[in-house]
Image (cartoon, rainbow, N blue to C red; front, side, top):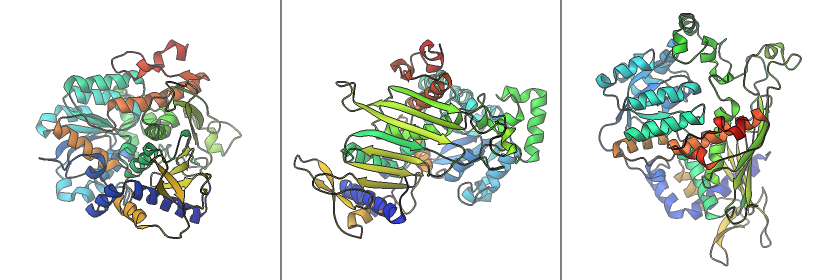
Amino acid sequence: MLLTPEQEKIGKENFNEVVGVSRRDFMKSAAAAGTGLGALYFGYDKLQGDPVRVAFIGTGDEGNVLISEHPVDYLDIVAIADLRPANVERTFTGSHPVARRGLNAVLGQAKASEVKVYSNHRDLLKDKDALGLEAVVIAVPLNQHAPIAIECLEAGLHVLCEKLMAQNVTDCKAMINAADKRDLRLAVGHQRHYSVLYDNAAHLVEMGLLGDIKFIRAQWHRNNSFPDNDQWQKWDAAKQVDKDLLLKLEKSGELKEYGYDTARKLIDWRLYNSTGGGLMAELGSHQMDAASIFLGKVHPLAVQGYGGKNFFGMEGVGPKSAWKDDRDIDDQIFVTFEFPGKTHEKNERDISVVTYSSVNTNGWEPYGEAVFGSRGTVVMKTEKEALLYKEPSRDSPGGVEQRIWVVSSKDGGPVLDSYETSAPSASANSAQQGMGPKISRGYREEMEHWAYCIRKGKDELRCNGRVAMADAIMALTANLAMKHRKRIEFKADWFDPASEAAPETDPDVIG
């Protein structure tokens, strides 16, 4: 969706206006508190007692984002574990001034020097009692999410695992059952559940201000087609110390014990089916998670789509460097989900459609979601901005240049109306202040709430194992639909952790 700067400005102010009016008291409280994050939004209190003693297993790009964002009042990092020496080094020194600041900057060098370092998670687990370890954050390649999480749960540790939950649904269920058996808190890092921006947008949908949601369009487009521009191809740029060690482990066979056939597949794990889950798992799962939030966390009915390796590894297409690319995963995917509408139980024609596309050869539009309702549209842009526009009605105009506000309709429900002014109201300003000067993507809040639930001894997590498994089922079933070139209907027992049923073993899917 291409908008002028002025149209985007109007959309942002419209969103703040409607949030400020519809959540007036709440946003005033948030603004008065000086923060729009954490407990005030998501219903948890300041942690009582000592911070939870935690270790980070996997300190690559995402692991270091989480380390930089970790809430020091809630989590006490006592150890880290990673197979790659260069990852360990940058965990302390940092590799980005904002996103990956490093432990020396986050904790101070004196405190950081007390963090113990392990070359693998198994040596870490052997020392769990000496460390006083209570919990782990897992940010390793996808194929090792379930094996490592289950080892940690069986060792009595609470787990926060990065998304996608696991590489197949059977493993998701094993993780849930391992946590349930020991009454441990299992969280999964779909951080939109802890985003104040998405929380406020979902509130507008719940109020009915957008009307009936019949279509959600989501996309994550990137241009990796230039030589040396692929964000997921890291082998050539990897430090020699990592390559030397991993190749040594590969030759000895030890690397296979940790789940990787080759050193290359550990470093470039997102490119291979044996270690990753492709564009749908790594990118699309975030946005299907967002779509399910907007639709009331209902399970989908069916999915179909197309995926292809249409650029990389194809002689004559793109630069020669792309011809030699041996990735397994598709570089273009396009899927369509069918979700039940509000009255679907009584009227099976009531369907909401969600489309998702991810391409590697064009980054024209920013990633995000557009929620199309009969009364209005919300555009979520790069997890940092929300734009709101009104549909025209009999009594008032709409469109991308129309400012809006909230009024009560004749039947008492809130509706969007338009008005002529060039400045945001006090309510809009209150909403902006209540969401904070910088929109949080939710990493810190998800870790805070996980720690809070550990201390409280209850599973009130917004993205616990069951919620995360539903996200995984959507992404993994979409992969199967593309692989088998068929429309797949979702089955209720796939979403039941007590059932052995799973899409990857279902004869209707793979037969």
